[in-house]
Figure 1 (cartoon, rainbow, N blue to C red):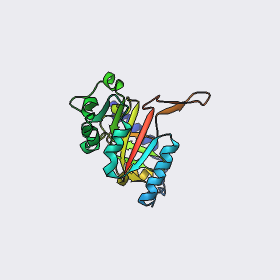
Figure 2: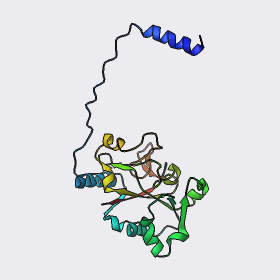
Figure 3: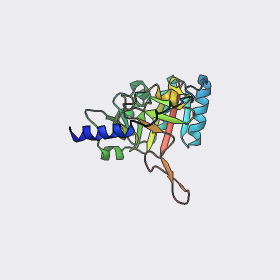
Figure 4: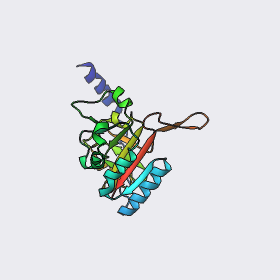
Length: 212
């Protein structure tokens, strides 16, 4: 008998006269029942409370909104799989390509490169209206976790159809085996005197574009 088998045998012996574990009640809410407009309004309210800047725009206006938000950025990074149409206004103005850095699995940017980049633009996997949380799962439109944590300014596009009311709904839409990043406003903490400090664990500025 191996040591592992011996240990497991002793555990089984010790537990053989223990009472059967009761079933855990799982009566928590699994859905919010909110309509699309209500979900957008609640998410905006929560994000603004967290000091994020939010713009709710028609899908066709996403490119122009991104261009406006990146107007002062000397450089910005995007994941390789980001919707190219979202950057069309930057390209039309002739300023997108010269400032754009693309991060890909084959050619990931170094931490030094990311640290020297002013902003990042990503999509999102799902958002939770009740908690004001945006979830990234590392898929093609969002890229590596590092690109959304190192630059000081994060521009994140959330499709209205991807807003869930509560966390159980959101978790049902994502693959839990993927690298999950949950964002609730700009990175912030408080010191012992409760003075808010932003940018400690990630971007100091979070701009969320909700595309209807």
